[in-house]
Each structure stands twice: as structure tokens, then as C-alpha cells.
Amino acid sequence: MSNGNVIRGARVGSAPPRHPERHRPVPCRSVSFWCRNGHRTDIRIAADAATPELWDCPRCGLPAGPDAQDPPGRVRAEPYKTHLAYVKERRTDAEGEAILAEALAALRHRRGER
Ligand SMILES: [Zn+2]
View (tube, helix red, strand yellow):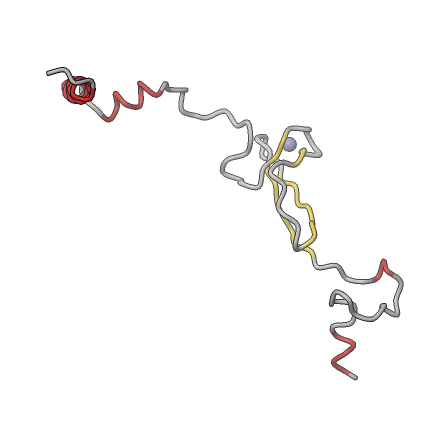
């Protein structure tokens, strides 16, 4: 009988607990959210519930996310770059010409041109 007290109320479908519902421990886990102002919010959610993607920061109202390093809406330190700018970082102009020529050749080949 000693073991029964430890897990009382923890199983689904177990006998009704002797204590009122509000005293029954619900398995919870703690989740932290950060907004881009660096405010940390700890919430407790049911252990089997999915982590929300966003949580409104109670201090400033901005959306907060579970990743401290990448809060939602954060302005990147790096200036915005176009896809082309990234490509140009990786490839020289000469490489670009070669890739373009190769792609055009393949395209012409598919079209039956020689
Ligand atoms: Zn905040």
C-alpha cells in the first residue's frame, strides 16, 4: 500500500483521487521564451503539449520565441543581402560565366540545338 500513494492520480484511468481535482499534480514542463528585447519569459505547459512557436512577451508585448539566439523579428546585424549577392561571394565572375555557359549548353542540347 505504500507504493500506491506515490503514484496516486498520475495514471490515466486510475481510480478517482481522494483529493479534489485542483490538488492533483499535472505533469508540466518549463519553457522559456525570449523576445528581441532580451526579456525572458518562463511558462509552464503540460508535459505532453507542443511548445508554442510564439509567446507574447508580457513586458513589452513583442512576440517571443523559444530560441534565445534567434528571437522572432530580430533585426540581423548583417545587412540584408540578395540571393545574387551571396552567390557572388561564393563564385567569381569567371566561374559565373562558365556555369552560365554550361547551363546554356545543356539547355540548347535539350532543345535539340547544336
Ligand atoms: Zn519583451
